[in-house]
Structure formats: C-alpha cells, structure tokens
Image 1: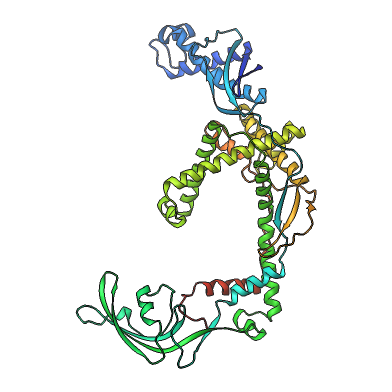
Image 2 (image 1 turned 30 degrees about the vertical axis):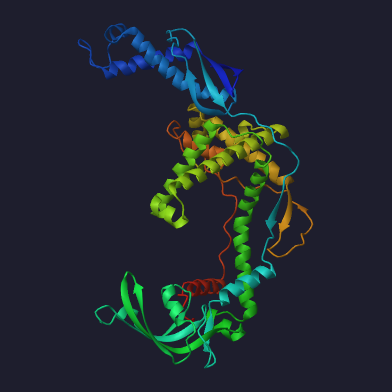
Length: 502
C-alpha cells in the first residue's frame, strides 16, 4: 500500500491510497468464498458455486462494490497512520468512487480534518506556585485546631446573663398542637441548644433572646405549617469553653502518647496526602500556564468531540457510584444549563491544552518513534503486548497512541523546565525565592490522548487499549495512631451542632 498526502485549506488534507494488486486479488477470493457460503444457489452445494454463477445471481458490480468496501475499510485507517496525521472527525469519500477491478491495483482518495497547528505566545519556561511538600507548622496547627474545635464543654454563665443570638442554653420545652395535645417529638427536658444551629426555626430563637436563667415563657409559632404552642424554661444560660489540649486528654481521646505524638501523626497524614496530590496538581498548573499562551479559539469540531467524551465519562462515573443526574445537580446546586455550560468550557480548555502541547512538541522538535509506541503497549499490562500492538496497527488505530505519547512527552518537557515557587498560606505576604523543578521524569498525564482517542475508536479497534501508568504512587498507610486521630476527627465532625462532645 502506498500513501500520499496533500494539504488543503481549513486544516484538512487529501490522502491518496494505492492498494497493490495482490491485496485486491486476495480480497476478491475472500469475498467470493464468503458469498458462496452465504447463499444457497440451486444446482450447487453451499459454498461450491463458481464465480460466474455468483456474478449472474448477485451481479458482478454488486460483488465488486462489496470488495471495494472491504478494501477501503481495511486500508483507510492504516493510510492515516502512514500519513502521520492526527485526524479530527471521520474521512470524507467521493460519492463516485471507482470500483475495484480484479487483478488490478486500486487507487482511491479521501479528505480528512486534522488537528490545527496553533502557535503559543511564548515558549520560555512556564512558572507557577505549588504548596510546599510535607507539612508546615501552620498546617499542623490548623488541623489540630479543627480537630479540637469539636471537643468542647459548656459551662453555666453568670446567673444574670441573658441569652444572646448566637448563645447556648439548657432548656426545658413543652409543646402542644392546636387541639392542646402534647407533641412529644418537640418536647425535651434539660436540652442543650445553640441558637442559630437550625435545629429550631429562627422565630423560636428570637423568642429565647434576652431570657435569663429560671425564666419561663409561653408563645405560639407556625411550625411546619401548623400552629404550635410552646412553653419554654431556661434552666441555664451557657457558654462554650475550649478544652485544654493536654497529654492526658490526647491519650484518653485518641490513644496516642501525648500532644507531640498527635502533631506527628497529623503531620504525617498531611505529608501523605500531599505526596498523592502534588504530582497531579503540578501537571494541572503547568497545563493552565500553557493554556494562557494559546491565543486561538478551539475548533468547534474538536470541542464537540471532547464534550461528548466528557459527558460519557461523567455518566459512567455516576453509574458506578449509584447516583442519579438529578441528585448530582442538587448536591452541586447546579441547573442543567449550568452543567452544560461547565462541560463545554472544560471541553474547550482541554482541546486548547492539547493543542498547546502539540505546539510545544513541534517547537521543541519532539518526535514519537515506533519504539516509543511499542513501549506504551509494553506498559499496558497486556499478556502479549506485541499481539495487542499488531491488532491496533491492523485496525489503523496507532495514530491514537502516537498522539497521546507525543503530548505526554511534551508535558514532561514542560515540567522538566518549569520554574516553581512555593505557594504561601493565606495571610503570609512574603514569597520564598523561586526554585527550579527537579529534572525528574514527570508523572503521566491523567487524560492522555492515547486513552481518550482509543476510547473513541473502541468500536473499530479489536483490542484493549494500552493502560496508562498512574503517575503518583499511593502513599503508605498511616500508623494506628494516625488512624485513631482521623477517626476521632470524623466522629466529632458528625456530631449535631447543638450537642456537646464528651
């Protein structure tokens, strides 16, 4: 098979393919065998009808048309691979394509949209900020504060203290409906309550404001659409007292040795989380920096394709999690229109980031070799990577892998030269000096086009796509003390706002 490429206007190319005589002859033989076995022709056993009889029954041109389809389908994808272009959309064929002739080479052509070549506003090293590795004292302090904030005690205020809008009370509540019947669900004795927590309506809170210890008050409110009469006695006006962080309290609450041990475990947990997140964050911010250098608009056809893929992946994820689309929208406080707009913007950004990586690769002279492609299949975890690669080549899907590898190489190049500053916590004005990123191999781009493209062509490709390696290793599990602290924090966070922790 021979292939030639002619550049056209509007990011399109014309690819001309010549399939040699031997391939045409072989396809005619295969097609006639299939037709002979498919049809029962009087006077001949199934599968034994000669060509002439088949031509008379089905029509010679009909057979040639079927062979033509088979030849084009078999060679088109491989021609795209051979042309070393990255297609956008499907090939466009002429309506009057000639039919193949048995015993002769066959030439045909088609037009194809290809990824446009954009230029970046600059190709110097990108710069961005990242959180520091490990855990800072400020981060540990914040975590300790958030943890201990849930462990408080309430003490009685002075006898003449009044209930404030955001205060706390111990109260006894009696409630009756319009018929005078007691409503047990609303009654309580010695209940501790924080105003503004939402457990009771705002009108109920307003009635309590200004009351003192021992005072009693009756009032009527609309509660869940019906009138309810309340009789409330303030047993005590209370205030919240933060528990003192001591070695004894840490040991009894978390099972750790002391405060230093608690801080150590929290520090290790923060460092572990950062180790898992920072590689991805580094990639994302490098891509954001590249995106700012793209001045061209993303081609609509590419955006539509990316949008379809994002929506497909999103609903597959919802299905795996057992969620409905309506439940997701409610949880995110989104309307369907806002969701569509968000997806479209994300698709446009994804396309522009990909085109930026293509531009970087072109400017840096980055290329993809057959060895690079084979290495990608070798990393896929397939039992026979060579056989999987051959099936992809036979199906004309190698350009998908090449494109993903090219963009991954470009991303690694960007990361190797990136200038990274240390991101400071809010409130800290001074910035530390910039430091160059270590020249170690960048993590794999999560959504590399080898995966995305392969998924799009899954119906055509006969084999499983190469699996991408994860870029960040899972951090080692925290020790028992850290787990206890984490569990205690979650347990505390789940307590109602108007109840004190033990």
